[in-house]
Amino acid sequence: MSRNMPVPTAEQSDLAAMLDAVMSDVHALPSDEQPTEVAGLRRRLAELGVWTLGVDEKLGGGGADDALAATAFARLSRKWAALGWAAVQAHAAAEVLGGNPDLRSRVHTGEIAVAVTQGERIDAAAEAPHVIVLAEDCATLFTPESLRYRPLRRTGLDGALTRTVEVVGDGVPLVADVPAALVRLRLGAAAVAAGIADAAAEAAFNYSATRKQFGNVLTALPTVRESLLSSSGAAASLLRQVQHSASATPWQAAAVLDAACESAIDAAAGAVQSHGGYGYLTEYPVERLLRDAVSLRAACDSTSVRRSGALDLARSAKGSA
Image (cartoon, rainbow, N blue to C red):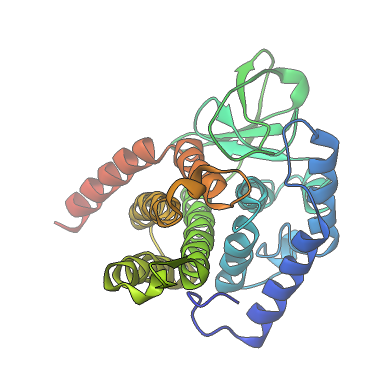
């Protein structure tokens, strides 16, 4: 476990160790150029029970509590942010598809990927995923046959196989708890951001603790120590927050996500700076982490989420007046 993580339970520690072992077995990061390998990783995580770990057992999931699910999202996203975000959407999809057990079971096994979105951009770690579009009071399922996909360039989240979609066929209305799905997506994305921030802070600390300059390691400099405290403290706060936000309302989850995305970008940018010019080399993980943080903010559309959360907050004030 990282030094930024709250003291883990035995279950959280075992889960983190298992995910670390899986990631260490894969020599290359998931890539858009290798969609078959990405699909294989999705199925492997499903076989290990991680892909829909936090979905209720009554819906075919692992039944883990929200803190353990957040641990999985964050730990996975330290190295595979694209798959972490796709796993968050798999959780939301399995819950929204409660009335469609056949399709839901294919989500649990990783056979298919489902993007859950409120817009046209999808990041489901699949070339032609199913798509669930959430509106204010309803959800609609679109199969690959009813969609036209176009690749979308982005900065990070390699392996997300980012697409924009155009509806060319009919969708299937779903009976869904849209507010609950939004909370799941927002808190899950915040956990992904926390994992990115955690990895960035850890990389900055490890580099500074071993890199010598002027006859001593960088951590001998007070300004470096203070910078490390700032980034590690932000990561620690994020990890604690996402593990204990399960009962959040949609506007509260929006606020958590907004802060998490900005903190992840700040932590990753600080980690790049801590490496000096080396931070921009692909052989160091921090340049990827910064790109992932920026792309995650776009993938979950934090600007729209912020506006939606502000509107929900205003409505709640009227309701309590």
